[in-house]
Length: 540
Image (cartoon, rainbow, N blue to C red):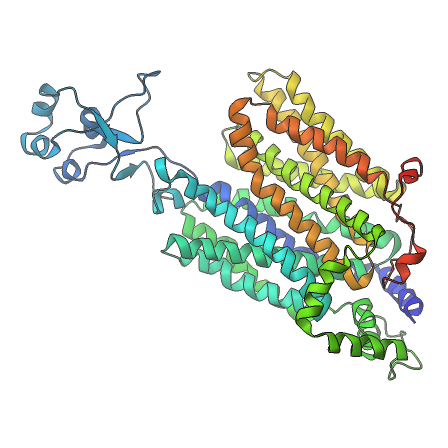
């Protein structure tokens, strides 16, 4: 039964205009994901700031006059002011007697932390909630909220998709996206803003996983390889669009609205994106599976499509008797139900973690190389686009395993190579950093396809979703790796990522090759697929 379904899926895949429409519907959410993830760079733009003295501003003093009487300079530079402290003086007396008198009667005074702040412009969330000095950690929370949301979304939507369906998961995530995106722009409360960012992360993770799985299960062979790789092109497109929009729309609320309102276009996908027939079949809903397949391929008729096989009826009865909560939890434990699945899951998690960690460590180090945020984000998009395009011929002619392992190894070597480059050679550092970004982006794209092919249909989205979730752990801790370990020595973060990349490349060699194989549908099918072995290191 499933074999015949695969035949019609293969027929559907060969109709290029249908495959293109499927790619368009499944890939568009990736543009919004990229925009929302990277919008942080522009939302937290830190302008020049100093301690404000309201009584002096009320007396009509200019900013420079206020700085001259209230602000100390840093010990190592007479040109740089102390942004977080000011002199403890009688400013009411200064306001009463005027600026000239105050300058002639300045006395030595101790410093104390700022009570109020003044900014050169007020176009970012930093100025909205004074996220400077002692509150600077709150700025990092804005990105941590969306990363944690993606972590939770990966956990939740993987199982939601496997239990309730790919399209249900997609529609639910799209609705959360359309609500939380514009809401973030309207929040006056810092806490509510973080909640909105968290929901954006949850939705972004859910919508990407479900659409990627639909694309995987509705295509086959080289078409599946090509479309899954092209789907990731949505991310570099999003980065470039973000740079352009952010350049022309500077106030953060207007920027978020400009970035979020187009999300309502996802209603088109909610209506037209099909459910996965393979998922329906795996759930014992054979008639619905053939109804969906017939809409996609009119010739897909089946003599017994109105009747369910006895095995399929048993599947439904079993799932119903389990209860949804128990089934929800069982999808996670199934990933470790056999030694082979445990090994595949552990290696998949390692790939996800190192990808997430390396991606953001490189991004943070690269941001310190160039001062122009708009150009740097756009360059990241261009490099990612080239990386994703390069994987197309790579996977068409090279196996999944050697591609993933080789790219991890190359990214590790490039990150270790930063050790040999002097810090003052900024241009060369930028080139190597972008080359590292190239490899990490490419391996992320290839490993997603590889991981999705390692699991059967019944737990495929859970396996892919949890791997993406683990990658979010890497993205969450990456800033701390850069800040804490980088404070000891600038090269430690990239060295850690380089060593981990080479280590994971060796683990991947133990996995079986999946190129040209039929995707397993059930755990029973896993018994006839190749398992994880040390001897696989010699098989390509």
